[in-house]
Amino acid sequence: MSCLQVYHSALHFTPRQTALWNLYKHKRLSLGNSNNCIEETWSPCLRIIDGHSRGIKAVAFSPDGTQIVSGSYDKTLRLWDAVSGAHLNTLNGHSRGVMSIAFSPDGTRIVSGSYGKTLQMWNAVTGAYLNTLNGHSNSVTSVAFSPDGTQIVSGSYDKTLRLWDAVSGAHLHSLNGHSDKVNSVAFSPDGTRIVSGSSDNTLRLWNAR
Image 1 (cartoon, rainbow, N blue to C red):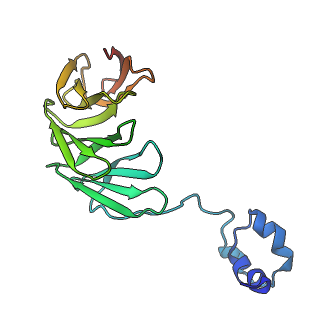
Image 2: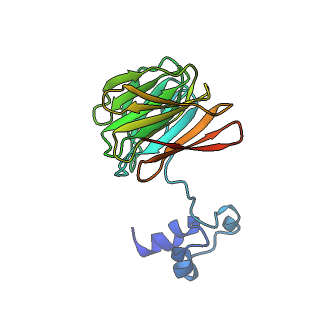
Image 3: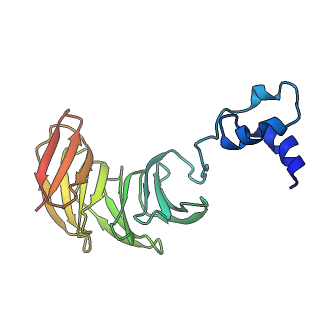
């Protein structure tokens, strides 16, 4: 593209609060009132990614930032390239909508929680189903891996948290105390504590060991 093409075509559609516009605006030809339809700045939206057939409840980046996983009311998880937005894989297995998802710290596994009361484990590289974790009596709202990747904590509408072995899927402990739905869970950076948030208006701190 020649300089004249830049000045007299592309420049007219360049947002007005950019360095490019301010550097070359004196070289452009007037197009009447075209300024009225030009944005002031570039849109912060980098990409729109389509694919799910129903609303998306949960999203997460892989630890290395190269992939995104999404969970939807359409009962599936989808893996996407985080740069191009390309669809990489669809993970099927849940009987009801997916409410929560998390990557393992090493990026090799994904755990998802659903309205179907279960957690499911997936191979993040191949998309293969690995395991189903049963124990909650209501929807699983939040999931998280421990920093060392050996445990998973889940929170549920059944008012409990549960700890699981992240390799075998074995149930380790139930944490009881909330009087209403558990909406969110997280491990401390050193993996020794868990915090939970509930519809009972409280947070609770737990010993993860």
